[in-house]
Length: 112
Image 1 (cartoon, rainbow, N blue to C red):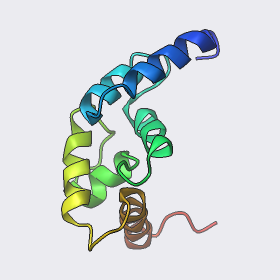
Image 2 (image 1 turned 135 degrees about the vertical axis):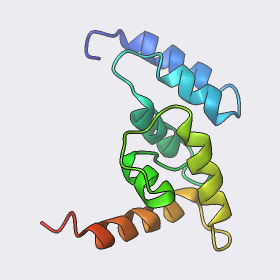
Image 3 (image 1 turned 90 degrees about the horizontal axis):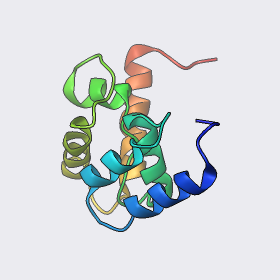
Image 4 (image 1 turned 180 degrees about the horizontal axis):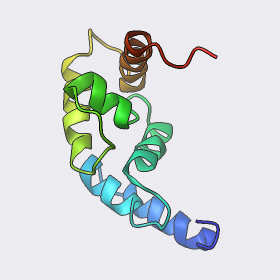
């Protein structure tokens, strides 16, 4: 990604935020060389943690019981599942972090 001009990254990122459609935003962001689906969800989350959450293999595992990497088509499922499991008024990033912590405890990982 270091070879990608910063102006290109900026223009593509700006284009991604012109619409309010996570699927379109992910497709747009992943068109930047070196940005995969999981990294694109991080960008969305930093942009708006109230309405977006990080999607990665841990969220796939904890929400759907599958041990695999994130695909573009998974984010809408993660997004819907987190919205449905929101106990009330929390931003999606907070809900996502709670499920990630549940995964860590259940699988005894990340205790350095």
